Amino acid sequence: MSEVLKIKGTVYKVSQEEIKSEKFKKREVILEVIEGTYKQHLTVQFSNAKCDLLNNVQQGDMISVSINLKGRLWTGPDGIEKGFNTLEGWQIESDSLASTQTNIPIQRQMGNIEAAFQEDAIRMMAEEDDDMPF
Image (tube, rainbow, N blue to C red; front, side):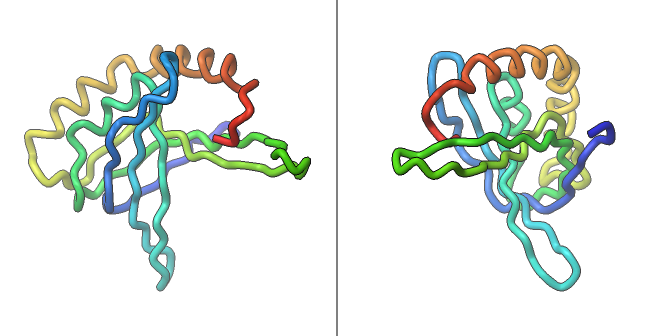
């Protein structure tokens, strides 16, 4: 995929940071997106250094999130192979944050996002040999 994928929606919920291992932590935001007449709730995961991008995001904020679509296969103990998809967030643009002051820290945090993304990609590739589906 060469084009940048973006999701625009209203923040429904921001999770607390979850530390999965000493090399991997994640945080999620659930966006409420209106698609035609139907409301969708999409979960976007932020990992490692990118978790901090959610520090100033609050319920009710209208944001656009740049994502990478990731997928992997996992074979369960029953021998059945399953596919899992993850929307991995790497940039946030605020359309209407609840507090105008929150826009400044988000912009500062995004300054080194490309370097952080490369570090996270290397870490995630090393962790893909685990036996967990997520």
